[in-house]
Amino acid sequence: MNMEQFAQDGQDIKIIEKLITKVQDMLTPGEKIDYIAVQKKPAVTILPDSITISNKRIFMCEFTKLGLATDFEIFGWQDIKDIAFKEEIFGSKVTVIPFTGENLSIDYIPKVQARKLYQYIKAALENYKKTELAAEKEKIVIAPSSPREVVVEKVESNLPTPAPVASPTPVITPPSPAVQPTASAPGTAPAAPAPAPVAPIAEEEDDEITLKLKKLKTLFDKQLITQDEYEQKKREVLSSL
Image 1: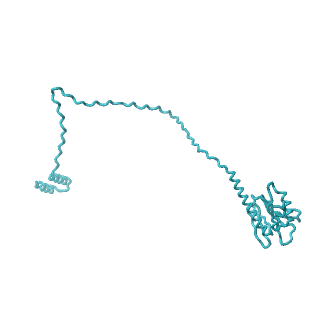
Image 2: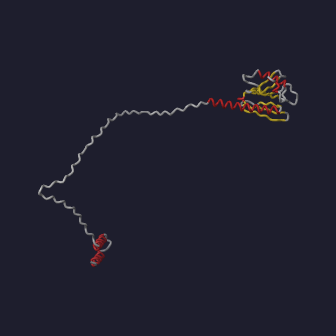
Image 3: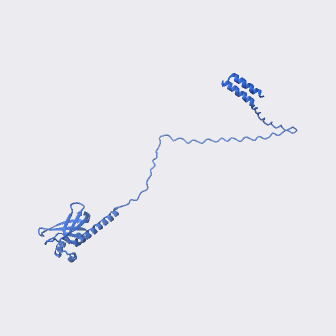
C-alpha cells in the first residue's frame, strides 16, 4: 500500500505507517482505507489521535500508555447518525454522532483534513442510505391480488316442497251464432219494422210567477215572513197575470 497517498494534506508519515499497520489487521474482505486525518496540537505530540475512514467503517484511534496501547472506537455506517466539525484557532474539532451512546470528538484536526474528512463521511453515509433503500425495495414483494370469492350459502327449508299447481284448462265458449233474418213465407207481407223508441216528454219548466209563489211559500214556511206579508206578496204576484 502506498503510504504517501495518505500524507498529502500534511499528515505525519510515521503516524500513518503505524495506523495502517494496526487498521489493516481489522479490515474485512472488500474493505479498504480511504482517508486518514491526524491530530496536530500546538505542542509536540509523539502519538496524536486520529480518524481513519474506510469504505465500510470509521476508526477513531487514541494512543495510550506512551504508545504501548491503542484504543479504537469503531462504527459501521449504519451506526452513525451524522458528522459535524467546528473550525477553531488551532485546527478543527470533529464530532461523530452515533444513533446510540455519547458523541465522540477529536480536536486539533488540521482544517484541510477536517473538511475532507467531513466530505468523505457525508458521502459514505449518503451511499449507505441509498444502498439500504435499494435493499428495502427488493424485499418488498407485492402479492397478486386474488379475485374475491363470493360464497352463496344455500339455506334448506324443512318445509315440504309444494306440489306444482297445474294450470286450469281454459274453457272455450263457442261463439253464438249470428241471428239470421227470418225469411218470409211466399205470398206474405214482410214483418213491419219495430217502432222507434219514443223520447221522453220533458216536463214543462215552471214559469216566473210559479217560481215566485214557491219562493214566498218557502219563506213563510221558514217563518222568515209573517202570514200577512205572505198574503200581501202573493196577491201582488197574482195580480201581475
